[in-house]
Length: 285
Image 1 (tube, rainbow, N blue to C red):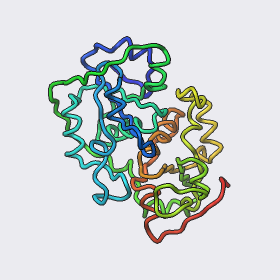
Image 2: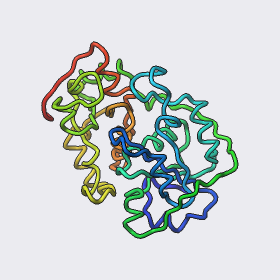
Image 3: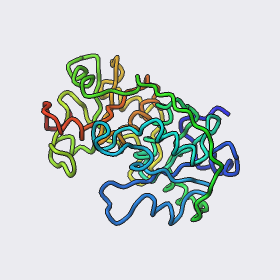
């Protein structure tokens, strides 16, 4: 089966018993101290879904690489997928409850490590629940699979590449954080407030239909959004956020809109702001 980037709840509901599909719950919370992704998964998840954790499965410990969420080591990621029963011929559908803000990290990592058969569930579990569909509380188990990672390093940018890009009029740097963090009005977690000079602000919510409808806008709307930020004329696009997790949703939306693949700045603002590098404040130019 050729798996589209984005699948609907109807599409997934019709295939819940397909042994070739693995559903991954990737809920995770940075600021909500009263709940965890694993806890929400245990309270109820889409039937057949396994849980993959941003910190344990989809990132290396802090200090192993740049920023707060360095990429997982290839062997670490391969082991997490093997335990989840995801192998070379498995189709993967990822979801969260934040419009793809964390599920897109798994989508991006699978692509980065050479596995293209991966989709996001449009609207995630919020839409699934709103439609009155069933949940499951038991965690399913699957036979261990074999996943062989093959990194596509051209999908990544480091701070040296971003430093060069910000002085290149042919490049676009997208800051995926909320406007208040981009402008430097608040900074709840990283060393300094502000943004990379030359970056334009593209908060994730702008890719979604409405605050209470977490499905993605259609391709033409997304195309117009990114065109207004300079993407049409760009030879190179890189996206960043706080730590390289949420920016993957912008990369996903760019692909939905028909743009060439954008790069991810792995360490993102947590890397840039921890070093003696220039910063800027203020609204979008």
